[in-house]
Image 1 (tube, rainbow over the protein chains, first blue to last red):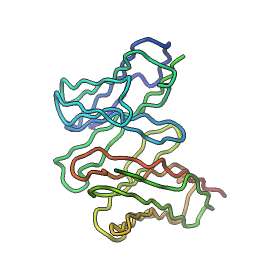
Image 2 (cartoon, each protein chain N blue to C red; image 1 turned 90 degrees about the vertical axis):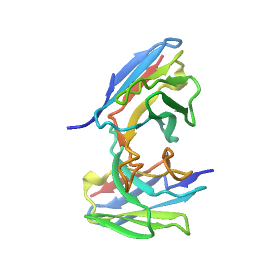
Image 3 (cartoon, rainbow over the protein chains, first blue to last red; image 1 turned 135 degrees about the horizontal axis):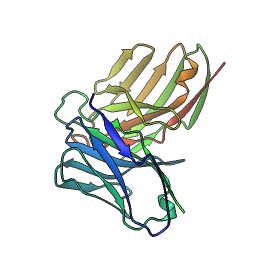
Image 4 (cartoon, each protein chain N blue to C red; image 1 turned 120 degrees about the vertical axis):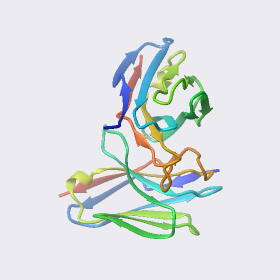
Length: 116
Length: 111
């Protein structure tokens, strides 16, 4: 079955380290998204991509970067981790060509990141 | 711009009916989504409304009024497993733009 996976599921790192969170989907969706979820803020968009080589900044993109070299993967990199980036990170994908509810996003299981 | 408002918390009794409201302001409109998120899990798609009116799907129904910028999610015959957060979302600029989510309503179902 098609799915969307994230790894690692849990990560503890130190301030200043570079961290990369993986997201892989097998639906062949063009659109992929990264969100962070914090108490009191809900889901906030970090970066998104509408296809290979396309990346766009979201609401809270400072300190994060993404790259899209193929359809299946959108890794999220924290260039120099900060304690403020302790959060739960969700990756999602959608298929804009599917018609109907074309923006329906399907979420991965999440990565809980702790920056000490 | 975009502004999505939902109540922060609600409590309801097992077997009862509960209505979770969502108001939004958008520059364009391309549908209103509801997601369910159990604690510690990923959001999962519940419903999508693009036309005014009520869409029923089993125990869950979703209503939309575009002129009022208003939607609600209606949960009937509440079960303990319905305890979760319910997220309202819409692409504020219309078209193929990212969804913006409300902060979610945490529903507690009690016996």
